[in-house]
Length: 478
Image 1 (cartoon, rainbow, N blue to C red):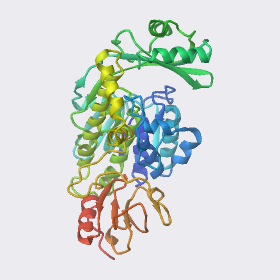
Image 2: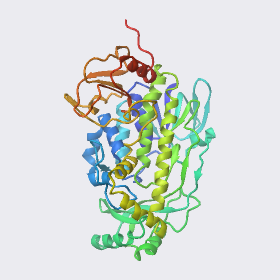
Image 3: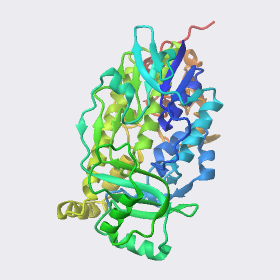
Image 4: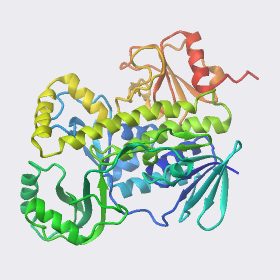
C-alpha cells in the first residue's frame, strides 16, 4: 500500500505530488495520457501562483522561460482601464508561459522529489474502505493506497464514481481554440482583430511563437460532444462570420473547444478520496483563473494531507481543505460568470462594462478587483483576530534575506521579531526564525506551510494554542 495515489498528471496533480514529497509521503501519480498534451489552454500564471513557486524555490526555472507582463497585474479582465493602485505583491506581474511548459516544469519537480509518475495508466474503478482505497486500472491491474486525490479534470471519473454531485449551469456558449499558421500579413491581421474586438471580446488571433498564431473565436453552436476537436473548416467558417476573412489559416498544430459551463462539486471529500482542480470546479477560462485555482487547491491540500499521513495532524485539519477552498472556488466562479457577461456585445453588458471602467478610478475598487483575479485577496476564516490572520503574507524583506526564501521546505514558520517567543515543541514541523522586517508592525507571525497567517501578536499562550490547532500536539522533550 502506498500513501497517496493522485489520479491526473496535470498542474494540480504535480503540485500536489511535490508538496507531499516535501514531507516524505509516498506518492504515485496516474495519468491516462501516454504523452504530455501540446494544448495551450493556459497562457500564463497569476501573481498568487507565482508567489507559490517562489515559496518553494521554483520561480527561477519559470522566469527563465517566461515573460513578465507587469501591466497584466494592473488590469481587471472586465475593464478597459488599469487600476490606479499597484498590486500588493513582490510579484506584481502576470508571467506569460504556455501551459505545456508549465506542465513540464511542474512534472520535473515532482519527479526530482521522488514522486512515482506513471503515464499511460488509465483509472477505471475506485473502491474504498476504512483503511484505504483500491484503484482499478484499464490493464486489469490494481493499486491500493491510504488516500486518493482526483485531479482528473472537469469530466472527472473519480468524482462520478463516488457519486459526488456537480451542480451548476450547462454550457450556453462555446469557443473554438487553435494554434495554426496564417497567410495574412501581421500588421493587417492585427488591425482587423483590433476592430473586431471593439464589439466582440471573445475573439482574437495573435502570435504564439515559432511562426504559429493562437486563435479563439465563438462557435456557431455548443457541440454535443465537446471532446471532439473542431475541424479547420469549422474554424474558418467562424473567422469569416466575425472578421470577414479567415486570415488564410492552415496547418493547425492543435485545435480544441471550450465553453462557459460553470459547476462546483457538492463536496471536495468522500471519506478517503478528495477532489482538487477542475475535478472540483469548472468555469469559463476568462481572466486566466483555471490553472491557477487548481495550483492553489493543491498548495492548500498538500501539507494537510501529509500531516495526516505522517501522524501529526490535529483533529479536523484535513476538513479545513474543503471549508477553505470550496468558498474560494465559489468566488472564482462568481467572477468568471460576471466576466462572461461583460464580453457580450449586447447593449446591457456593454453599459455595465462602461460603468466598471468608471469605478476602476477608485483605488479601493481597483485593489479589490485585482486581488480577486490575482488570487492574492483570499482570506480563510481562521477565527477571530486581526485582518492579517487568514491571509497570505507577501514576501517581505528581512534583515537577513527575505521571507519566502525561508519557506522552501514546506514547513510552518514562526517569525519572531523580538526573540521572545518559543515554539520548541514543534521544532520538527515549524521553523522558528528570529529576524526583523521593516515591512511588518507585529511582534510575531505564525505562517502555515501554505504561507497563510495563522496567528499574529506576542502572547505566548495564544501562540501555543494556535500551534496545537494547526500543527498538532507538542513533541515531549527528550
